[in-house]
Length: 337
Image 1 (cartoon, rainbow, N blue to C red):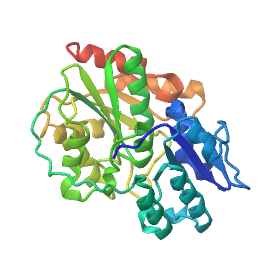
Image 2: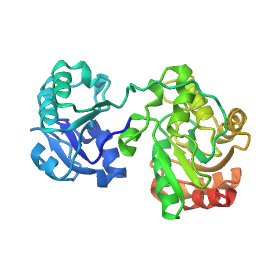
Image 3: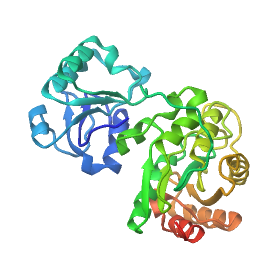
Image 4: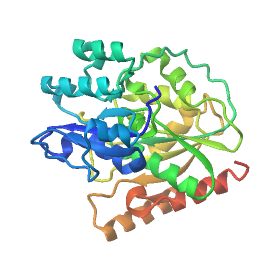
């Protein structure tokens, strides 16, 4: 899925900022792509970028209208349809992360067919993928893994992309979730791929590369989560990572949505290495990323120091304290890359 940039962010008339969290994520990590926003009367979200009409956005080079909202059931409100049709008729492609397919709405499908505009349903890929082969391919790869879902794997991967590029390394973020696809402009929502083809899809989005190139692959779920471990395992085998970072949220006692206890970081490292060796015998942990948002700064730093000492790995909160230590470890462990 290749989404043309830059974007005009459509917020509709959402009631608060949380309802536009996809748009905020894109703006946070790819501000240069977010030229303007389009809001309807009553909208209570504001990305802090210019409000633009469709002609104004086209004049500024916008190519895709992004429906950057989330709601219960992932539905497209009826009164938004005419706005999307107007954008298509003006010459925009449209991308959405909602569950409902844009092409399933007759008025949108008809307008896109007449205008030749592309409709991107980020949760759904129209591409077919091969089964994974597990054959070693050139290039370097890093995967973020987790003690649970929603512990910061995407933000860690994006922070690493920036930190590694700032250090002069050749590194690219590879998206495996809907918001990540918007941020990168390409990728696949791996949890919507038929199970037999998950590893093959990851091989496709992270193909053979030069020996000094790093693909930084966004992790999903957890190998220990009873609901999502299948996705996590397919992603691990397809990524065949040389390196991985364990992501963790320290205040949880059970995993999200289930009653199972959170695994330890050591358990995640051991199982990731054991299972990851199937497609990369040299796989190794290079760091720990902790979401310390719920902790005071002093408490957060104490925890990170303790984890680093316990595991012999750099530990940081990538958003709060940066990723310099993680990049130092990657450079030290892979000097030839």
